[in-house]
Image (cartoon, rainbow, N blue to C red; front, side):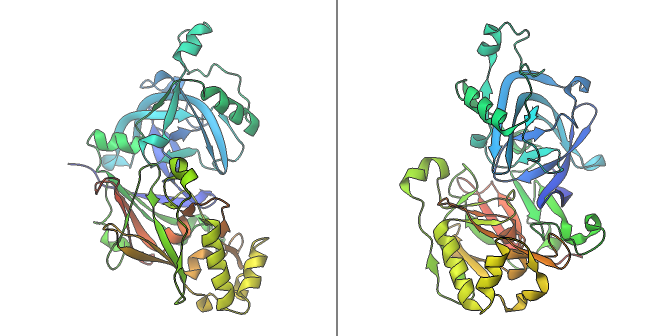
Length: 405
């Protein structure tokens, strides 16, 4: 029988992104990794995992180089045992893990790496076997890393250009390995309440607002984490968790249609929106951003000024009077093609007590790209289940989040 794990998570290590522990190799080296539905690679810092001390490690001829919006890294791929959960509830599989031998400073915050939860197409690796053999490197393996280490953005970019000339293949991600080896069902879920850490107390790490749960292999059975019925949003492609954003609505105002994705971006973006647990804001396509900010500015006499101030720095939370701000409704294509609406409350698109107690941050920004990233501020309103067992690409299910106990 497949396992369902309920794993405590925290937003304190990565500045808002949620992390969970994963144990690596024969010695169970623990890495706190960002849980990211916007990528597929499992990567950890060599500072927490030493492959030479792992009797289960198998080196490969593969290397990876991944560049995110917040930084990037490059390094070798090895295979070993990977485990999540504790005690009798722990589950383990043999899977690929990249070691970030070169990385840009601060890319993971204080986390130890990243666990991508998307699909195979985002987990690209490059086979260096011929290159290594031509240069007399024996054995022709990428671990130990046979290149000089230069921890800089420029070095990561240069190495990405070098790798682009090597043979490429897609690797099964960790979560796919769990499913194909029969360890866990092909779904997972998030219970979160914040998109940046709340600093309302002297000990943010113990604040229940800054915690949450990651459900591995399950979701709908965790009935204490949500209320009401699920709203089911269609995943239209498995490049990311791609969705079709149809329109937005501020409060009870008129619905404003969202522009479709321009044809020239079809191959790289596929659709005009994605759901991404690894983005701690609503990063919106220009037309969507302008529609929302304009409507918010018309909803209250001081709203536009507060938004403008918040683009530069945090504002006093007391000046907001959040009970006067409207919900923002995102209308997306549902599982059967029907429009469904998800509400983002002012308590989540504004984050009070951040970056310090008594301050507030505005979590909506303009991406300058024609795809809207629906990140944690929307997910904070809902217990969010990524169900990859349904339809061609799955569905993302949203039920109103239960208040913390």
